[in-house]
Image (cartoon, rainbow, N blue to C red; front, side, top):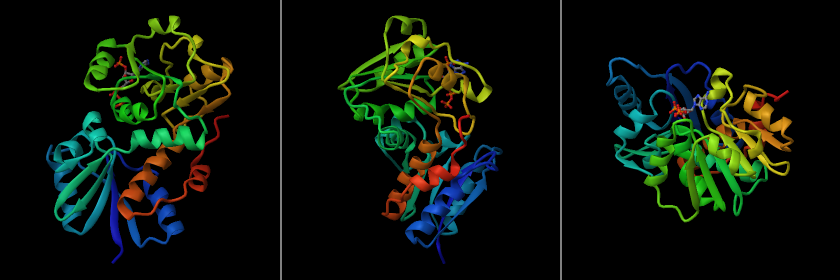
Length: 277
Ligand code: ATR
């Protein structure tokens, strides 16, 4: 029987993961199946039971999406440093009855920015908006990319201040509110990792942060030109992108981790891209 993998979430109807992993498997000749599982949100232990049932049926690995990323973290036997800082898990591998947990969202994001968009972060000024799971997951991979300065801005400043205090960084790491951004000049890269775009809102970011030689990245995907990306475009930012590449790259990281084969991502990204305009 083919090796079995799955993504678990609730709701799960719109997930692209089976399509992405199916394309990876086909292109790299891997004998595997990948299905979507709607995990139960009730009773509270329903998620863990669903994962155990998948393991008992011979499952080799799982992706985890909302609302289960924190529960997946708490049921892991082993966990990477980046998953620990995120407090959230988006990929699990099952080996000898143990659950090994990872979070590839941040590395997928960095790879999309640095490789696909050709915007290396080393030595650059980088601004990330938000303080939720997306930012927590991205923090260590962003620091590892070696920016000259990494600024985290959030409406509730106490959250980003607390986050900055949790990490030992050898880059300049600053936490602030949106008003302070007015005085901070331009950034080579601005990443919107808030959930504002999901409701069509714009974080209160001043347009002075954008650079006419830089990039702007929206974590949400398939939402076309969000208010954030529109602001960046009007400010003259030449490279603007949504999170479709991150989605595919985090999947590629998980695939490589599970199968030992790194899949090509370009064709899959092209297939899933919804044009911004
Ligand atoms: P996730 O885990 O998906 O990142 P989350 O933990 O709910 O989501 O965090 C949402 C983030 O989006 C927070 O940083 C939130 O800011 P606050 O912590 O100040 O509430 C941010 N956010 C949501 N709506 C926003 C908006 N309209 N403008 C700016 N930030 C917003």
